[in-house]
Amino acid sequence: MTYNIADTPMWIWIGFAIILAHAAALLGWYAFEAIRLPKPMKTVDLGDSLVELWVPNRKLRVQENKIPCTAGAIIVPVAPDMKMVAGIAKWVRDSTANVVQEEALEVAPMKPGSAFAGAGGRYRFGTAILAVVMDDQKRTSHEWIVQGIVNGLEQARLKEADTCFIPDMTDDLIQQPKSITPEQRRQTCEPVARAITDGILAGRGKVQVIRIWLRTAGTEDIWLAEMKRLEAEANAPAKAA
Image (tube, rainbow, N blue to C red; front, side):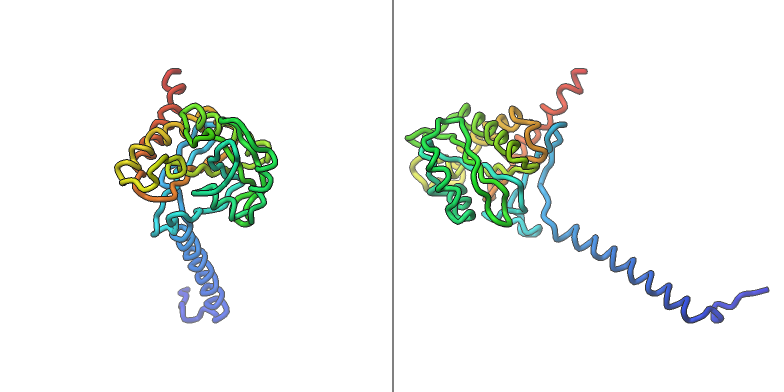
């Protein structure tokens, strides 16, 4: 007995077409999301914390000075007076409609290395954390940045944030003159990047996902080198064993 495909009832063909249409739509949605959603340039698993490097990339819609995605907290640099007058600190202040600034001034002054958690920015970050990484003269040090990051991550943990953005603080920590050449900026970035990653290593485990955010392009290679150093640190115990 032979079966003629032409004898297949129309309702079976319709059902088959509907199934294929749904499958195609689902695959198309997955493909669209894979292209549309921004992604970190590099990720390092420290075991107790995941560290991501986010850089400006217009193809993935991660643009300069635009936060790539939401997070439970963000850590920004300030001086002991806790004033958020420029750079990323001002952006965070404006994102909270000045609420976090008013909160921070109530606890000012704070000593270098300490951190304060205040109000968040709607649809951007749940908690704004001010890390005191400068003195009254706007001078900074490796130790202050490390301690500011560690204490900032601890504040994020106390606020039950599972993700935390740490922006590149290079532009915020530059002394006079404010206008510098790209090469001078890179020279300033290198010790800042080293201090921030040292702070992340010292504060690992406090927050599940730590997102380093480069707001401007031009120093990606410096930060990638630091990410590789983090990776080496993470793998060192396993190699030793």
